[in-house]
Image (tube, rainbow, N blue to C red; front, top):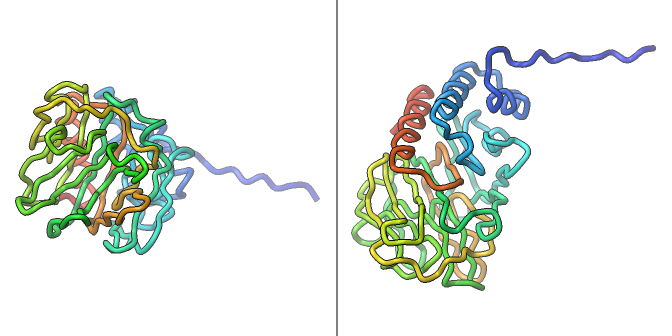
Length: 274
């Protein structure tokens, strides 16, 4: 008896990244697929596709689908640890033992003076209290505790957003008032000079560094979402629902604005924008 070949028709009309994501997830919901395809078209039209090591759109409603890196579904897919709730709105950590390992080592994968991390939050939660600040995305190692790579959306008594990049000295990284932790936050480093680091919410800058960083190396640890990769110190668990996270090279202010417009349109098309 001969073998029966099964032919799967490729998704008609979808762009390459969306097509690859469909193949990886077997997603059939056309609202999701059209949203991804429109988002991809916007990235291509604005020459942004090459800006990412990883982009996690958190669509499909399951941990298996949320794990995939949209930029390359065979590289840097997430490993979820601890308690998570996965839904059409994104991925919600329990705030006590949940994080997602990207597999991206901050020290070996990223370029020190040319990088960004971002997090789209659907939650406005209370501030984290020292030493248990709520890190939304980043890496840290107690073995090299002067090196940091962490994005906080709202910490301290004033509710500052903070991008702790390389140096752990507070006057060498950007921070600014952020009373609401909902929206798209990005930490961006374009250079090691004064003003080369920024932290923004919804494409509006909240602050920049006023002193050039004296530390220019990153922790040799993987970047985690919703909790850092601390060894030997309390892990700073986050409790914010994530509807997109990105890791990649630095962006200009214009590119940050354009990317926010694309991301917000994407979230709106899925009825989960904040």
